[in-house]
Image (cartoon, rainbow, N blue to C red; front, side, top):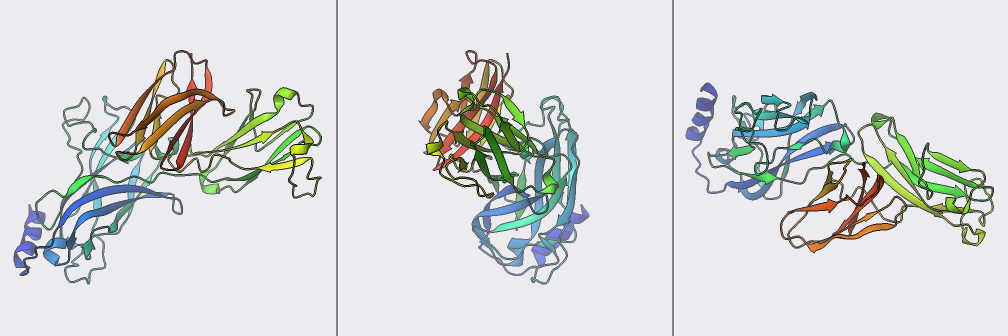
Length: 392
């Protein structure tokens, strides 16, 4: 009660009645690869706030879903600033964990952690305007798996309600008010998840058998790394290099290298080897004959570009799986299924114009043999490739 009175007094003593107001905001969760931490932002979608009355922080709640058993710690506060009504504040307001529900029966894969502002002493943002991205706080999450797919903000439209089994009556809905009691929060902005760029290029030497060597740039913070070669013959070989002394014709074709870091992030590049020295036109760093050597890079582009927009579940799958694509209404979306050599298995999983911002596609896998496949999603000139495992 004291906190609310404190804020209310500020609203009364500030003489300026401003017509400028923030009308619409979103939250955004963003992984920072430099710090290996998550930053939470306030995104101003509409409105303006100049005077102190319009910049004062009132009630808010932000809920983060983390993998079950993870620890979440707020390691740094950024905005708003205490006693910043005249833009002289320097001490950030504290954001604190509030309600926590661990492994609810309705969602045993996540813990739910709500975070709220400390309202006393009163804290104020600097001037806000449409398009601003304001960093609120930075948090450390102890367990990052599945490349951050299991770490996300609560979705007010789809999230578990307080009445769901295991939620203990807790309301974890996101909300935000500033400068008044009117609700400003409208939804979550696109999150930024971890990405991986380890493979610089792949060099191949076919003079005496087949030799594949990877030029890599590892970041020790995200190791250890696992390297897997998927061969034209259907074998899987671990290691960042591969050698076949007496190759058969079936050993020539498309090789795919998948590297996975400790967070479960994946990068995929491929190289095609042909059993003809006339096709070898490049040279290795060691100066070998350019007719015997070729260098190839990923011919499908950046596989991480749509990583946050495409989710596949369940994975592994048996008789069916689902592909969920977050996009904008009116966007052309194409999805195909290939084997690990890039050969099309299902060409027309989807080829459609998105009629809603969340496209969910069901894939019948009952006729697929057990093994690994690639789901290729294309939209807005970008491409995503994710591996799906079929088990029988």
